[in-house]
Image (cartoon, rainbow, N blue to C red):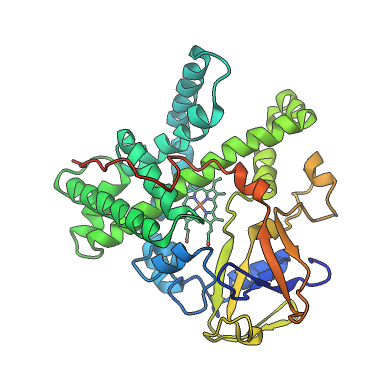
Length: 371
Ligand code: HEM
């Protein structure tokens, strides 16, 4: 696809036919083009599930905002996520890592890496950054799982999202009344008290950070470990030369693409990408594909060359130059609809994801009362 049809139409769950962008250069162009929007509430946005489509009609955090609106919210967090600030967290994160490993060693063997390390590590870290009680993890993991699920019904996802937002809103008010040394207190004092943001705005930012902070990182830790175990020669190289760790992390991020829902966007004006004209507009019917405005880009298809002098790990050496394996699969265009490919993500890759918390279906644990 990258060579023959680098910007192709695919049919997704609701029958709509957004564009799938395969080449790195085209993805970069799309993501920095002001005519292409991240606003999930715009007509034609290629949502990953029915639940996501329903939730898009409610409140949204800045990940789903464009340009100036996005910048205003994002700037409020910049100081807390500078390279320097994040580096300053290292000693504490190392302490948490050491503690979790000590706990694993003290348990009967073998121990479950996901349950005892991959999930608790990012959860503990983001809880400390935000000022959320780690003891409440059963509650927020289950809700986050329902919010992110592609299979939970829309009703379950909306209810989980509302419960999480309400929990975080209460917490913001508690922080406002009695601020501590954490990010939610800072947002409460700087933004809520001054009337710049509402309780709901801050709860949305907190929800983005709480879910974003755990989910992707937990998946990377678990799947990165599994990938290295499946490539013992690469693991041995890392053991022999810990200086390779930074590069290995970068390569694992590219190889595993744990953000399986992809980077989704919608064109608000006509845009030409990779030789294809992507039309703006609201129609999303499979029968009128030329009017489909949606533009979906999937990081699993991004090809980024490794830095000069860096080694290409074995799992990349089997791929064409500059490419890597994609977890997403396309099926050839259907007869009668020659320009539209079927789109599916390999179930194996989805099975790999280690979403924290209980399954999205069934009853969720009761909510705590923050204070
Ligand atoms: C390995 C770990 C991670 C991966 C692979 C990852 C991946 C991503 C990706 C692909 C996006 C872009 C989504 C889009 O534009 O549609 C994103 C955005 C974001 N992530 Fe992460 N993330 C990781 C860790 C984290 C952590 C630890 C945090 C919080 C502390 C976080 C918070 C965010 C936020 C706030 C955004 C929105 C940024 C914006 O719109 O300006 N992520 N992440």
